[in-house]
Length: 135
Ligand SMILES: [Zn+2]
View 1 (cartoon, rainbow, N blue to C red):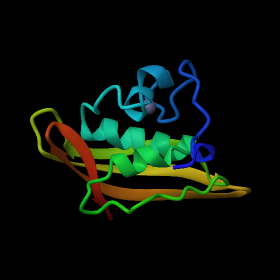
View 2: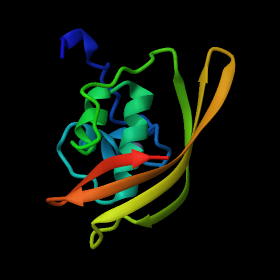
View 3: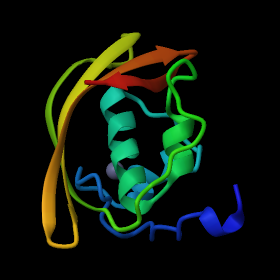
View 4: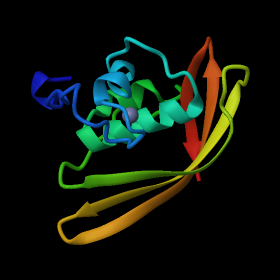
């Protein structure tokens, strides 16, 4: 990836875009930088939402299961991600190998607001949560 494609670093002390209540440096930041693994499917899902919000396409590809991952992800810089709402989760914990997260992601582009609602499936392989697919 060309260096110009890299997102501007998110300030570690700013509130994390995923809305969990922690700073980016204590929440999704270490997951994006590969310093920490997501402890749960929900944490991985949050880190993927935050990757959308800050434009980190590389994290989206890396956290995608190889069987379903696209070769690259193009993010629309005009799309603004406003808020993540976790609706429901199943499994996805330290003793699970599968999990689901149902969420609603609020976004807008110019004056047009929208909601992306998805039921995402995650699998854990070698201790690492990966996004499988969504419906
Ligand atoms: Zn976060």
